[in-house]
Length: 157
Image 1: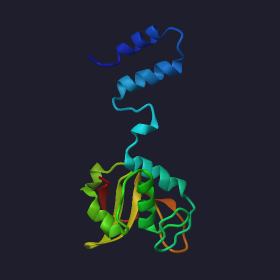
Image 2 (image 1 turned 180 degrees about the vertical axis):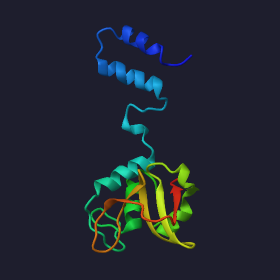
Image 3 (image 1 turned 90 degrees about the vertical axis):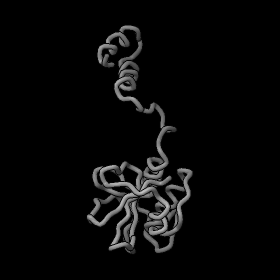
Image 4 (image 1 turned 45 degrees about the horizontal axis):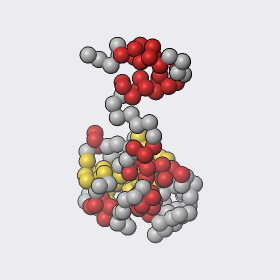
C-alpha cells in the first residue's frame, strides 16, 4: 500500500492544523529520510556549508583559516568544523578518504584533481558538477564548475 492514500487521512486528522504542517508531515511520509532538522546533516554536508561561508576569503599557500586558505587548508578547516579530522595535504587527504566512483558522489564528498597518480588539488563537491575550493594565488574561495575529467572522489570517514 503506498503512502499517497494516507495523505487525505492525515489532513483530515490534522483538523485546524496549518497546510504547512500537513505538507511537512506528508513529505516525511513520502520521502523517507527527510530530516526535519539540521542535526541529521552528514559531516560532508556540514563541511560544505562551512566552505561556502568562506566565499571570498583570499587564497594563501599553506593557510588553513580562518580567513585565508589554500585548497587543502579549506577542506581541512571545513571538516574540522564538522567534527572530522583530515591530514594537511590534498594527497594525504585522498589517502585518508574512502574512494568512491563519480556516479556515487554526494554533496560534501571531496573532489581530488590529479595528473597520473599525483593529486594536486582538492575541493568539496557542491552538486551540479560544482565544487567549493580555494583555487590558486590571486583568487579567493569560490564555487566553480569541475573543469577536468581527471578527478577522483573521496568520502571522509
